[in-house]
Length: 133
Image (cartoon, rainbow, N blue to C red; front, top):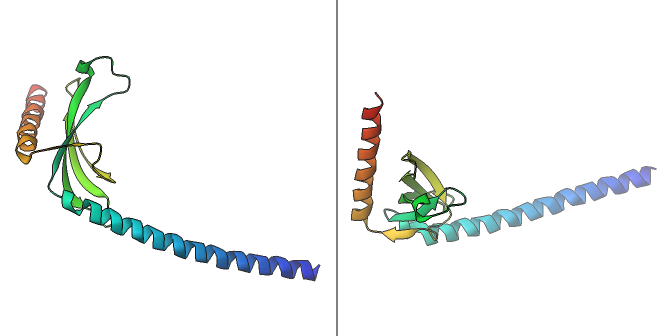
């Protein structure tokens, strides 16, 4: 029985060493991924985008609206930090920060277009607040 216990202990110790080696390689791989993401995304800071958004199962063009995005910075892990705003088909205004791995699904727009739409968004929000004091 002592022999079996010794073998189990050796097996557990070997498994710990193997697990540590795997973690070391996984960490190195993640470091490479982060570095690649940072390189790919660093040129996106300050750029503006839009995305044709909708709720699930749209039935017509009236079910879509534009979501606007501005890239604020690149996070330490290489993800894009962005601010998004939209006015949905019901007139609900929404603004939030979001992390994206890249901006591939968004359409690039000019800063002027973004600022114009931001002005319209803020005007809409102001009107909502004024309607419901």
